[in-house]
Length: 311
Figure: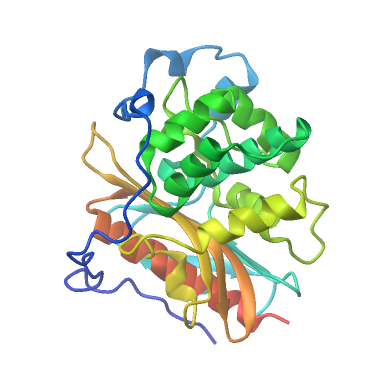
């Protein structure tokens, strides 16, 4: 039996954030309040013969576009998801405990702000290696970066970890194979796949058959806690697959200046039917942010449903 997860009509599908600004963000020092620049730099083409150049040059086969795509499972049959407006989507999910998995697509996407989980994981790994705890300033940045998706805080910690080189080195230890850090200060243009984001989530949340995490238990607990305290208006995404408030997530959204189309991504853990699931839903080419939200939410629901139907 197929489960059909159809993208809802955009009108009224995604509630607008309330007029309340929510909890006040920690005020950041003046030296890191530079605006985040979204445009690629010419440096993106450098080192074409190197590992990062090769990774950026690869074109993936699946993850496209309008019509209906099937979220594949190990058993129980495919789970279709409607895709509209020429958008591209990929999703990967895993049920904790049993290890049942489901997914669709191996396309490579810009991360937008979901990379902030990777930045924090790299920072914690760096601190562990140095035998130290995060400083008070680093913790302030981390809370703002995850809870409020603060770009200035992300830029500050991006510099602390050593930019793309630091992120790539941490990701290699975490087991990510298809993720490459953005050039220069452009952390939001890090490139990744849904499958790689699931690997990162397993480093944070664990799972059946998972290799030992590079992060210590205190670091893992810290990341989970921040991902469970997301500002109002930013708690959409994979949480749509949860059957209540049992979720921890990070979302990313970015309008591309060259096309006007939106990158909209969501990663995290959700609880549904008494089971915990890790889910990564990535999309690009969305005409509006709202369309992207509807798409990743539909993909997340379909993937969790597919995992839940497998033995």
